[in-house]
Image (tube, rainbow, N blue to C red; front, side, top):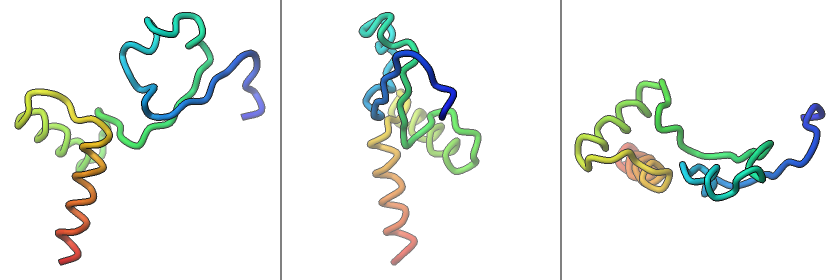
Length: 79
C-alpha cells in the first residue's frame, strides 16, 4: 500500500455500481473500494448461487442477497 500516490478515495461496497464512473467522473480515478460479493467469482458455491439466482429472478444478485443466502445456509446447516 505504500506505492499508492496522488489523490485516492477509499469507499464501501455501495461504490460497486456501474454508474460510479459516470457519476464521479475524474474523481473516481485512483479510488478503491471493498465488497463482500463478487458476482463472477469462480469459486463453485458462489458461481452456483449467482447462476441459480439469475435463473430464478432474471437479474444478477447483489451483496445483500448473497449475505442473506449465506446466513440462511449457515442456519440450515446448523440445524
